[in-house]
Length: 155
Image (tube, rainbow, N blue to C red; front, side, top):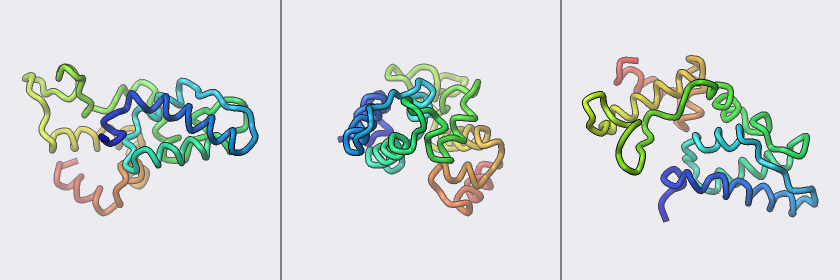
């Protein structure tokens, strides 16, 4: 089965399932998922795959204040991503199934892995307001690795 990062269209259904399961397990009413929350989850790379999504949603379902899971109910690194999403668009490395649009260079060829990584790091840094510690958490790498990548790409 492909990793969750390659099946982002499954995130909303899985998130709702995990939220309902957590509610059943704790005896609480099933929560709704705010559209903003689903948008944040759809843009997160999920390095921990489906289990990471499950942990995030179950935690939010248990700790939520109301009947809706909002971005405020998410862990701090995802809240930071939510705060940065307004007007920022989607990650630059996402290719549509037809190979068009994002993930393409100005001359129409697909971006190389290095070009994708550089663009993604720039995007996450912008979302994090230049905060390298926060960007490293979102990228799921340590600060030293981020520093080496920034040096490598001249950022």
